[in-house]
Image (cartoon, rainbow, N blue to C red):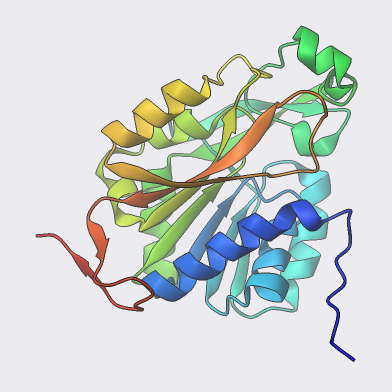
Length: 251
């Protein structure tokens, strides 16, 4: 009998993301993933269990409640670090809006659009309280992490609910240290600091990255397209040949 592969329909949306991440990790020999906006560690667990990534994972989550789960998960993995901070455009402190659905918590303020209301996103994206959290720029955090962990080929994943482009645009030259970026892009604005997909595309292009893929980051909000993840590759890195594990950096 031919072997049949069975998929869980609740998570089948992950398949394109898993496939592209496997290609990136293999092709560019990624040895460290910065997981910014880690929530309870879902992305890191997916990297380990489904992508097969064995390198260093550095997860950042400012919300204390999901961070407790994240920290507990990371304790059993010697190559998984967790930090209870947020990344922002400056070093210091900033107010974090805690939402009804903890995965929607953000440094940015929510916007109740018609599409968000119709897809029930607004019910989850409602502020319940605001807390002050420590924040660092990506540049500061990268340099601290570089001193604490040995890595040479990092990849950046951001899921900060409307704040990804703020982090990227204030990172200065450090952003070009990452071989690739996975970032949430908006087709419907849910936060005051979020920008449209077209504006995000223009920003990352200007910062020296080329769009590689667009993949779902959740099961969706049919019939609306609210958000997706965009994956960009640093222009300094080129594939020598299709399917090759080698790469070179332009000087």
